[in-house]
Amino acid sequence: MKAKVFFLSLLVALAGLGSMQAYNPQEEDVRGAFLTTRPKPSAKPGPSSRPSRRRPKTIKADPVAVNSPSPNPGKNPGPNSSPDSTPRRASSQRLGLGVTLFMRNSSGLAVRTDPSRTFRKGDHVRVLLETNADGYLYVFNTTDDGQPIMIYPDAELDEAGNYIQGHVPWEIPSSTAAEERLRWFTFDQTSGAEKLYFVFTREPLPTVPIEDDLITYCRENTGKCPWQPAADVWAQIKKELGEPVKVAKAESFGKSQTEPEQQAATRGIGLNRNDPEPSLIMLTASTSKNILVATMDLIHKSEVGTANPEELE
Image 1 (cartoon, rainbow, N blue to C red):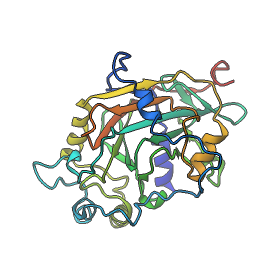
Image 2: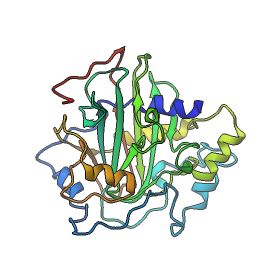
Image 3: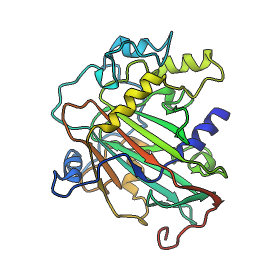
């Protein structure tokens, strides 16, 4: 339980955008490139079920990427390795990631909120993530530029899986959690410079444990989870921040989460082109990239929060 609470307290560190290029209206329309890969609306929605975060059995992953973490998780296999050296899938599609931040208002509803606002003690937030392709999503956290930790995948959540389907949104945490306190991230009294690193890849990252490897590692190494990447692995991930990433932002703050968004996230239904777009869309500049790394910064004050009525009506 302590590990899960630790996960929740860290992942609330979502706020302003950092370390990414600003959206240039003269360049390709990032929003259009992302949204047109959503399916067209259909009269009858497809079958729904709570999606598994484990890799489908039809996907054969590189055995080095999956199995090498067992003896020495986090150790880089060689000087020429990098997070982008995973097996490549033939694709003409650029990797894209959409992020929407919801905040609980006084009525208990999820309302879109500006990630750049100041969050305070007692504020409740939830993140909705959407990718434009099938792949693997990792979330790392640093506090005051300290040691990074991997807060997703987590050995206690989703069977330690991190597989995500294109345009099937994913809530962190889930609005269907058994207890209300587990349905939101709640800011605590501790202030600090928090940063989230979102890493979206076509294939699992080499040497980063997931699924049974992560569960086994945490079981056999009490006190060493959340898992921490080795310095060289972390340096390679941060190096990817220098790669061009195009960004589009939607100024739709103050609007309540729609029923299609909520149903899609909880039942494993894909969003279509008529559904609301993410508040923030990030897209790699090149189709040859197999990894997208983006960061989010935290503006966090320890004082008790009070909702802005104009933003959370």
